Amino acid sequence: MAKILVKQVKSKINCPLTQKRTLIALGLKKMGQVVEHDDNQAILGMVNKVKHLVSIEAK
Image 1 (cartoon, rainbow, N blue to C red):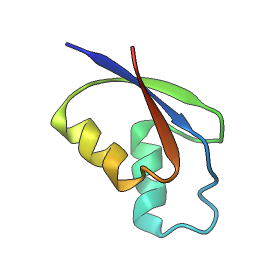
Image 2: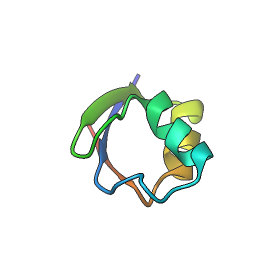
Image 3: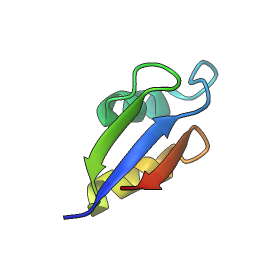
């Protein structure tokens, strides 16, 4: 299965609570942190919800 790298590039300070919880569910706790996830529909939906806060890179 393909992997993607998700990096938080913007702050979550002024975001709604649902977006903050989505970042935590992705494993992102602070700016600049990079996590690796499988490329599946659940992860892509979560990334799409916070696409203005993260950058995505295929591995």
